[in-house]
Amino acid sequence: MMELAGATGDAKGILAWCEQQKGACNPPEMPDLMQKFKAIEQQPDVQKSLQHSGDSYRDPQIRAVFAIAPALGHAFPAESLQKIAIPVEIVVGAADPIVPPAENAEFLASNIKGAKLSILPGGVAHYTFLDVGTDAGKKQLPQFFADNPGVDREAVHKQVAEMAAEFFDKELAPQKKKR
Image 1: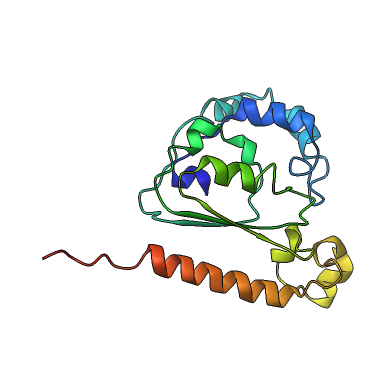
Image 2: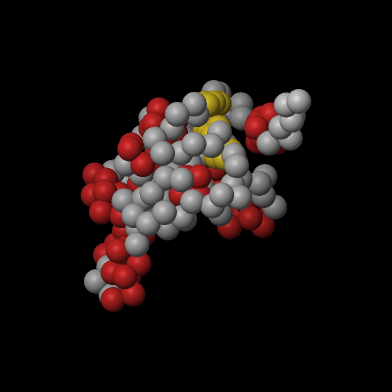
């Protein structure tokens, strides 16, 4: 979303950052992501793609961004994030071990002019924002559906949906013409 909003990525920077930490670069659903990337990194098509990592992918149709638990904040240099000129609101859980707020959402919000950051307290984590899951899903992939004690996933979803609706109602409201 940040690229569509106007930021440009930095593949070398994010790869160097990923060498320093584990969470978002090797999430539970892809625990060996960086290892797999290193195995294909030198392939010509991958190299060609990496050469375009700093290109702009700004989409002028995107007039506001509501980002939920954004990962890989450091994929974007601060000066790149400062180029975003549309409204941005970021929501994250305070107990997110996959993409800790300080390294991701707080970094993004502090470098995007006028961005609003909401950190939901009370054990809200990264996967809390996913659907509640079916019984089969909970059995097969429990890490995506097990919330911290006291977290009501459905209540979090309702709260965040209301926040998003309020944000978009405000930011995308038709502009009144001056007479």
